[in-house]
Length: 337
Length: 251
Image 1 (tube, rainbow over the protein chains, first blue to last red):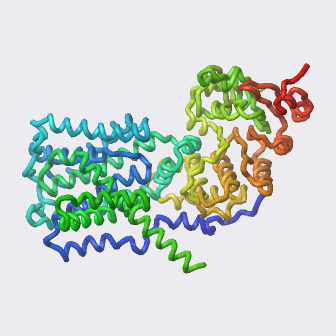
Image 2: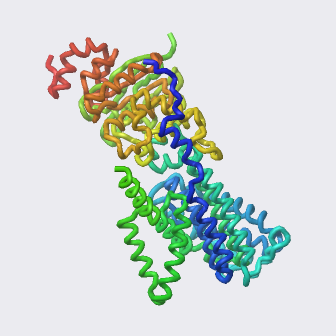
């Protein structure tokens, strides 16, 4: 039984696999929208900058949680590590150039991710969740105690960040530079993550998420892959933290807090994890909702958010994007009976 | 004489007071078509788990081509050429059939660590995966998700994944369990079509399959090797029959 050599690249499954990383028609939409926002709402660029940083942070979480299946509550540890790297270097007058500052933030956060990942990723499930939380709490307390370097509870403010490319000032009142800068940083990081998840490495991360035991049985170095993924995700979270410190010209303990880590998790679940664009949808939905709800119900607006999360958890596990996908699937199957 | 492909010496494993494997001396020669049979709870799957490194033995050694691999980790043993299928499907349920096989092939050829080129552009991996799917007659289902596939077809994906690892030793833990009889010949054909130098150990309850396939049979009872021989010898052995009927052998 030796079949004649067939060109399998013609087969629909092989063709789909060769095609799946290509740009889809709707993919430029968020970027066009982000640019349009810049021109349409010049008064809200501060809000827009915060939103873009949140998206970047959520993307870093999606890489570990959505793709590799590492359940973490401590992602803010890396955000804070990046933010404090930028903050401490600038405050002490050691380094304040923004772009190289971000690279340093990424390296420091990656080192924290690598070090903690080597220990944490021996565990899984609830133990892992608690340990990620502990790592973050340890860092937060360390930042609180090392008052001389970190400013302790007060944080570091009025960071003297150098103008971008030596020309564009970061003006806290008119954050036009910040907005475009953060958008560019987000774009670069997004392209990196997108490339990663469609690569064979990304495919093997998905395999680990779907069935860790099977990955061992196909000879994959599971823990090495997870640690690497964890460190890469930490680097991106570090960039998000670093750019946050630069855009706001301050750092405080909040960058390392559970509040930030939990919010980004909520955003990702709301948008839909393991979907790359869930971070965008979730961040926009969360920020719009909290804005809207806090206006109509200023004292207990988080109740509304909580209820929405319960509904998502019960009926739409895959978040807003999951609902959209299911609807699109239904439309397509109805169109071709 | 060269060392056998795979060999165990006095291999034992205890779970608390239960001796799931007791002093197992076993050899699998290159090119063997060997079957492992025994009543439920005889320790067959435990034995496969010991061979593949899922669990570590309490005592005893495992040798591959004369090299002691007792302490070698599971993933490393795969690299040495020991592949298996699972008694209960262990697949990437939300991925497509092709992606499932792709992951295994990518690991073997060393494509898996690459980060900056899309998975689909590794045409060598895609094409080999498709060829493997052809051996198990699954090309028609290549785009479907595992979770959409009937259980029997999923068994075939298990087999394709194991073959994708390029094994020298192939351990098949009840490969035909749950496969409709109309499709079980696909599994046997695929096994028959394997390169002759691969050593195959098959565990199954289906005596038709075992006697059709095996050139040598080992019977396990209560964690120990009860008998080893050719199918003719085992078939004629009254004490083996007694064990299979759940009775104590007389005489």
